[in-house]
Amino acid sequence: MRVLLDTHAFLWWVEASPYLVATAHRVIADEANDIVVSAASAWEIATKYRIGKLPEAEAVATNVAGCIADEGFEALSVSVADAERAGRLPGIHRDPFDRMLIAQALGHELAIVSIDRTFDRYGVSRLW
Image (tube, rainbow, N blue to C red):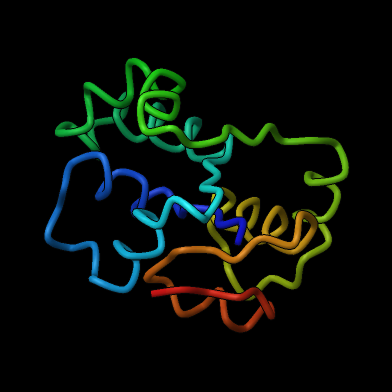
């Protein structure tokens, strides 16, 4: 299975946070799954670290690509098609980072590991 991590799931995995529920942990830890992290998450982490919303994420924010590689995950670029798809999504979810993740999950046929139940309203396969 190919699985896209929501930004918080990626951070909680890297930090070994207890907030990552057992189901999500099993999915990410399963070596049979391909785990994907979007460039949108890198943008979100760096932005939120810069403005002080993620002060604890300095190690990740200063080297997101390295953290993705260290975990053996795949980095997913944002394409023009992804951007168009995100822009066309209904306005249910207002967060631009999450809208991109939803668009990528739909466009690349990825399940998404996320605590955010709003994703369900877009028809993505959400694991939590």
